[in-house]
Length: 288
Image (cartoon, rainbow, N blue to C red; front, side, top):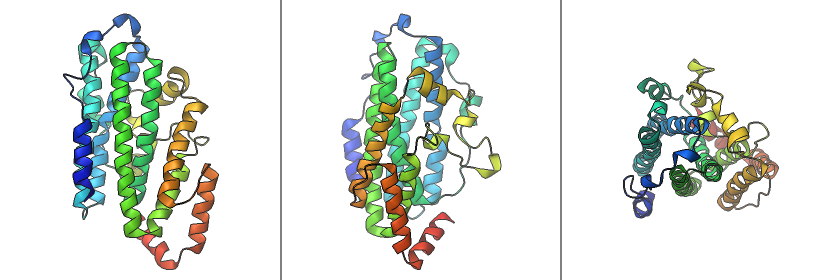
């Protein structure tokens, strides 16, 4: 069981909302309304862990180990939202999201391949770690800088946990898992198609299209791209850190060397060609 070890690791690294955030260091002169708007949007994105957890539990009904991990992941993700909400409550109450705004990002996701969802969240946590590291550098206000560093560290730990479940999946499902993971790895390292690649920016409910992404249901749906491009300046150098993080882990996971997204795409094509019909049927069953 992976959960018992992961739980101890997370328990040892867990921070305290009251004791470990330097609330008394707040400096209002180093904060703008535009930055407060971004903090509010990130609080809402973190709140959207609720439907993701519902999806994981629904789509992995026979995996109590993973379900137990998701319970801890959910706790920590909700604490991310809570610390951002607490920041706004203390220092900018006019920016605290309303109940209606919180409810907007809580909606049901369509069924999806559990293996693809697993890989998506590994890649998403890897990317979010770098987004928050970049946000730390962008901000000058001491408390929010500390918060973004804290969240970035958590997201890196979450990525490592998801990676361990990906390793377990390969042991259990073999090429079926490899194909699913390679598919998502190609998607999530191709920023030229979509620089804001993250699970919160992907379509997840056909009936609600086009308002079926988390970001589309924010009170400011276009905020994320502006925040990345024009505010925190998440540029090519930062994007390269994300891609190399994902590709490096995919290399270790799949026992291949992937320097670029194209390398991973070629690996996937070769695996599809050499895969037998039973593997293809298993992939279709996972996606059904």
